[in-house]
Length: 153
Image (cartoon, rainbow, N blue to C red):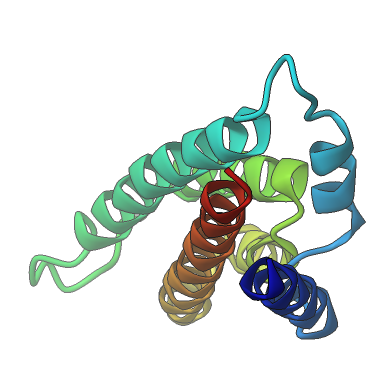
């Protein structure tokens, strides 16, 4: 049983670090409060949908930005389309409490508004980076929760 207590403490500490480092905000707590015995996988399911959505949107963003550069001399980016994708990503990251992804999306939308190609490229790189960090962190969190459930029997 001692091992279980240790696992629970590690989970609490790890979760606290995700909030402290700004990966998650209170929206993630709200999500966890919606989970109960009748739907024990709720948070994992919602976050998994976020991962799928984010990856689709990141691909769309890359395609929209890349399509404008095949040596045509001048960039012809569809900033409206770009902004629509960023807006969606901002909303879905906000809905699970992925605070750092959400923050980069705000900056990304400003670059779209200013039609700033360099800014958009930089923000795309940054949003990919923050997304991959939060994905790894949440996967670790879910793995820890699963270990606790298994240890508790």
